[in-house]
Length: 509
Image (cartoon, rainbow, N blue to C red):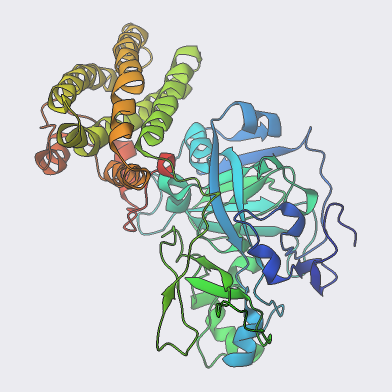
C-alpha cells in the first residue's frame, strides 16, 4: 500500500491494513512530529474522501441535529490549537511481551506515538451549538459521545466507532477538538483527512479518523473496538476462551499511562565513550492522561544509584504567559458576542448567551483572584490599578446579572449586551495596552507562565454567574462567590464532571 509523503524509514509491523512506526530515534530529533514520520494504525483500508463535499452529522441526545461541512467546521466555529501526543494504546507492546508477559496485538516497539500541534473547532462548541438534551435520561446512566467512521469495513466490525464520556468533550480544559490541520498543514489522507477527532490524554483508539458522525447517547459505543478490544483484562485471562467472561464487565481504556523512553543510545547499542567522558542520552516522556505537561525527567546510568535531571525540550510547546492567556479569553468572549448580535435564530442566541455568561464570569473572577493581587504586589501604583479594574468589573457584573436573566425575545436583550460590551471593550483595551504590558515587564517568563496556569485552574472552580455582591479579593470570593452566585443549568451540567487534575484552561496551553 502506497502512502504519498511518507518517508521510507517507516517500518511496517503489518502490511494490510497499514500499521507501521518510524525508528524511535527519529522521534526525538524535534519536539513536534512531522506527519511524514508519524506512525500509522488502521483496522481497515484507508479511504480517500473528497473534503469539499464531506459532512459530519451531529445527533442523538441533542436539541438540534447538525450536518456540518468541512468549510462550516472551519468558518462557523472558533479554531483552537492544542499540542498533544497521539499514542497507540499498544505502544511498547514488544517491551511488555519480552519483559513481562505475552500479550496479543501488533508487536509495536517504542515509536507508535507522535506529538503534534492540532487545529480545529472544539467538540464542546459543536455540542453546545447542537444543544444537549439529557435532562430526561436516567440519572444513573452516564452520557457518552460516540465518534463514527462509515467509510470502510473494518477487520472486526462493519464500521469503526469509539466513544468517550461526555465530560471529556464538554470540559474546555480537556481540549477535545475536531482536527482539520496538523502542524500548520492539512491532515494527510492516512492521518484522517479531512477531519479527525483529537482527545488529548486519551488512548489513540478513541481519536477516530475520517469522521462521519458524532452521537450523544446514554451508553458506550457497542462497536467491537469499544467492547471487545482495548481493555486491560485480569491476569487469568490468558487466552480467548478465558477472556470471554471479562469483556462485558471490564471498562475500556481511556487515559494513557505515564511513560518514558530512552531513544538514544538504542537498547543494546555499544557506545564509545567520548573524550569528554559524557554520553548524550535522548528520549521522550509522556504524562498520565491529561495531567501534563511533564516537568521533570531523571536518568540513571548506574542502576538507580545516582540520577541526573534531563534537559526538557519543549521549544514547540504552547505555554503562553499570563498576558496571552487573558487576551485569548478576551477574543473568545468577543466571538460569542458577535454570534449573539449577528444571529437571527433565538435558540442560537440563547446558546451563545450561556457561553458568553459562562466565560465572562469565569474570566472576571479569575482575574480578581490571580491577576489583580499580582498588580498590587509587584507594580508601582498597582493597588490603584487593581482597584480601578475591580470597579470596572463590578459595573460589567451588574449588567451581566441583568443580561443573564433575559431571553432573546426581550426588547432590551440586544441593547443590554451592546451596552455591556461597550463598557467591557473599554476595559479590555486599557488592560491590553497598559496594565498587562506593565505586568509582563515585572515578571520572568517562568513566573508569567506559572500565573497563567493559576489563572486557568482558578477559572475551573468559579460559578457561571458572576454575582456583584460577592467579594472580589482573595480569599473570600472563592467561598462566598460560590455561595452567593445562583448556579444555572449550564454550570450544573459542567459541574457533574469536575476535573480534579488541576489542568489549566485552554488559553494557558
